[in-house]
Image 1 (cartoon, helix red, strand yellow):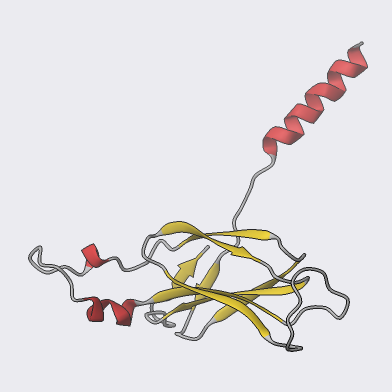
Image 2 (cartoon, one colour):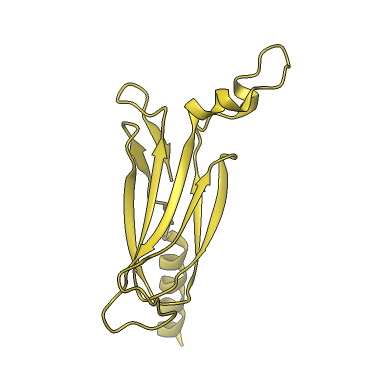
Length: 144
């Protein structure tokens, strides 16, 4: 009985001490930075992001006046999710044109924290790319 209590308390102690962390990218220039994952066909990927330094319209308003949308383009930060080709022995939807690119999702970030959903079309690699036009070595942009 005593051994059972000891192992149970050690298990609880170990599970309480585990911590979670999100990966972070530090964008040092305006070029895209990409990561890729392998995913099965017809899988729903939920891509969560947090961009703490994202420039919001409220950050550049002058005297409470509305901001011209063209002004925001120079502060643009985007996430692009795409899937190309697929494996030779693949499942899911079949394209009639061999090697044709799959659907691409390009989302301008308009809030500092959010998520993007993407449904894969075939087994294979999915690329997730982030680009910030304001990123530089002097003022890098963190994205997690």
